[in-house]
Image (cartoon, rainbow, N blue to C red):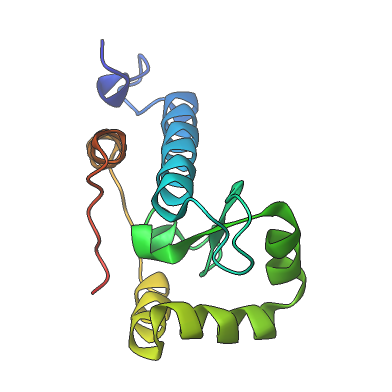
Length: 134
């Protein structure tokens, strides 16, 4: 049975199955961002990590392709430890309008079904993720 349809005997979605799907989606999002950017967007070293412009815990933009920047480990540490400077840096890279749109979208409510998550995962695997922020 596909992961997206797995339910417990009670008929409720299995939380562990959802968590596994979200983890797979996190991995694919990160892979996509690192492959898209190839080099660190700050210093041009190899992009070893993917940085969320709007925090990862904000579900509407968690898997948004525009919300990610490929970075090296030192630059990722810098961005996490210097949020004001990182915000200015992100605005320079993606533009103020896109940054503002990301922030606005991130403040919304995201109610992704298992099917929604599965569709996003498949789109990332194909290299064709859907940008919901414009």
